[in-house]
Image (cartoon, rainbow over all chains, first blue to last red; front, side, top):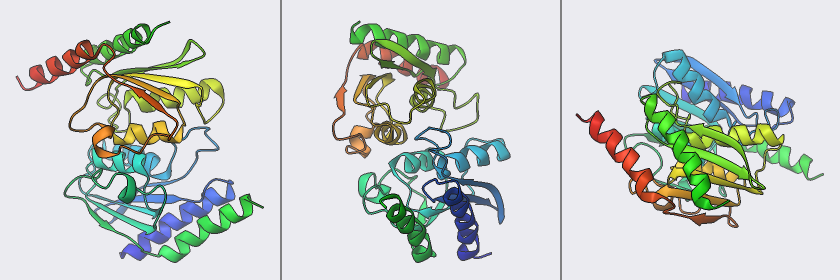
Length: 144
Length: 144
């Protein structure tokens, strides 16, 4: 399966978030060509700033594997991870991160460029336009 | 109540972690002179790298207040928050962070100095020696 295929799965999660009036960000974690976790942002529903898609996906993947470290896993997420999520990705030793849209204000590459594990590879701009459009449209509507 | 008083409460949490063979770090969140959340590191017990004391305390405090933002709250934690926790503290808009021991390798002040909310004040080295000793002793024993 291609990066685009898995990003589409993350986009499906982001659209679930949108339908729940959450900031539309979705994530999946893939291990040996199988999706072992799917999650979307739930900060409003759970009244919890820590409920980002990536955080939930990491917890789910660890539960699935029965292991804290996700060294053979790839995280696909529609928007560049924030500092919090990048820290969690680092602790989990995820080996590859693929994201769609860049987050110019809150992205980890600006605020915490060394948060990920040193061996982690990062691929950006996979279906980036589609991922960005979801977010842009959401915030435009919010602002009325 | 003084910062030392609340840090002692965080130390009590850290000692609970120690008794459960977890990295001994504890945290409490205080709002209007009341402790509204107490937590300790549970990464081993829960097989989850996101289960740091601060992350759990933030989720608990938000549940307690029924609000995502912890703008009038102070977080006391025995060790300097990591990047992940600093990101969460930033999202939660916590207004004051008091920590005990510095984390020279993984602390946010090294890796993500702008992760906290711009208005957040930080106080370090409150009962710092006692907080550091718990950690140092724990890792010495682990290494045999």
